[in-house]
Length: 322
Length: 267
Image (cartoon, rainbow over all chains, first blue to last red):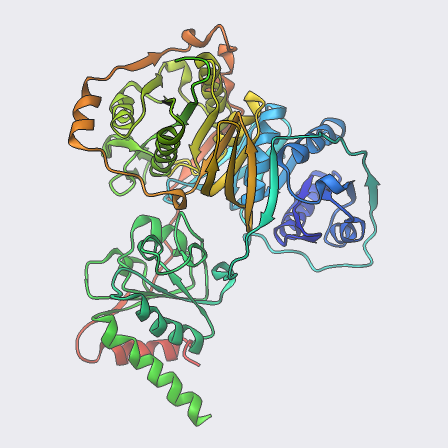
């Protein structure tokens, strides 16, 4: 069973990735793949879950479910799991998923494995959950002896299947259990400039080597010439130079762009955990012993203020010629 | 403690210093003797949040940990940083616990403490990195929770007004008793003063065994026997192979630009 996360009636893409992996597991185990969605006026959107691989979709549609409420969501999902008895429950390891899944697991007194990056079946058809631990330094292979096996899965590790609008499946409307007051209430959404560095193809990231907040503009220029975005290491967020959504690292965002340029970043383990899977890593740092060079494909030992203007100039020149 | 005092519980995990800890690549295990234990960095923010709330509303802050006996020093550090009371759950029967068994032991300890108004946890730990214990404890105690709190805007004895990250930042209200998990954005933890450290050295850390919780819990649900998930294998992932071409000197930048052109990255 795949939990379908939705915001304002729009399904989060991690759901389609889980349906793809779920389809593969269900086919190998020769069982059904179901999905559950909670929200308000989501019947149309629920069909998408079938197009992306579900055999059966359970809908909980009610005004009180329009926005996420961990207790309401938990109660309805727990009663569904008790009825349907799925062997495996997959939930996206998003903030919402990681807030909800533990409540469900605790209510069912079953095992939950967090933030998996791979799912395999062993020879007995038991699920092996693979997840990084110790700030990404080790990979743990985990089995669960209770049912259902519950797993949260990191966004962007599995590939969604092709959408197939001809695919058929069953949509089942469930009765919603409503609780008057769950103790939490969403009062409003706080607007913020949305930067999504996890989806960027190129990230130019600045760290403590920068002297002034204004110097990020130089990185901004390089990033935009390369068709990318600016990221930062944690100290710059702490200093208030950049917002948290630009932070690369264990406590920020995990990125894996085609090109990662680390400018004036020494490379703490926490930072490396956020970018070490990037395809090509370029590092620029004055200190030749900076750990960032250990994960770099190309590096320059030198003053970033002398280095960065050169590629900027070079690309500009080339663009002018074209 | 009188009945209308505000009581905050902070859950703290002693973890190895991640900058120092080593991994045995051959055996695929963490060499726990390679680094001293310290307060999980995210829990420092939880403790600071608790102390700030106490400064406003009065009351008491209790730090609770489940860890080997050596973690007593970590709880002493929690006292130096403002906790009034510290409880260490330590017993071989707690060992080998996954998040469910850990949450069960911690929830049982909180039940044993009696009255509580607010429980605060860090969003996750640097070693386990699951973020599951907070919400699981809330579920086991039957109280609401809000995870990934980045800002605490208002606190009264009845409710909290917070900003929570749920894909987007939301302004949310939590009725008490309740639980929050906080991110590093929520505050900047203070450093303990020398005086605080000296005072903490003399403070008493209460040590509880599994039997001490027997009146509020089913002891078979502690530790390894109460853990449905089991690690069957641990690997140190091979580092991605890098080209490792580091240029120095006069023409370093030219060489870099040349290399990036060869990769087709400068278009």
